[in-house]
Image (tube, rainbow, N blue to C red; front, side, top):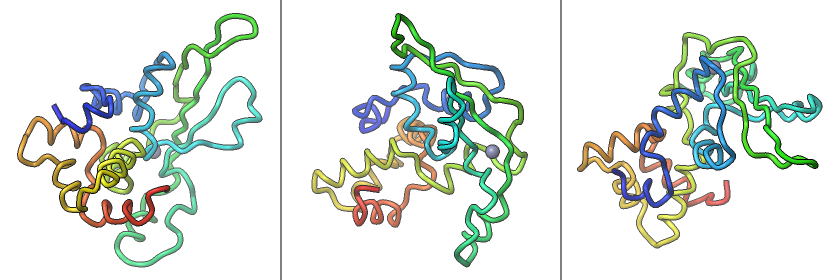
Length: 190
Ligand SMILES: [Zn+2]
């Protein structure tokens, strides 16, 4: 198991959780504790729809490839690749579950309102475009200990240990390289 992911309380079965929460083939119920542990690994897949406050008893997240103008600015291969993947109709609906009166939130039901993701992207595609906030936070913490950029990259990627390396990729680490770690060093508050 990955030492740093373990220290960050990353569940061993994070890859399974992430697949389930990306595809949302059936509604899933999570406790607040489960949600708080797993959701930071999904922030590169689903973006909060701020309009959803007006829906009252539920919240909506949209697929990161859903925004029509995503990647509209910029040039080069990366910008073109982003432009090629747009208009995904997938949404995630988050319905808080309450107990007591006045109610306190004990969990959430997460489900897809209707549409699945387009065929042109997967969880891996999202991971190659952006790193999730759980991993960004772990990198920032490792840098704050005074480790070098290369040292943090190598420790996180764990290429010397196949099990740890798989756990890291399952957690969403496909984009991790020297440049990504260097950017987090330059902008630690992102
Ligand atoms: Zn999508």
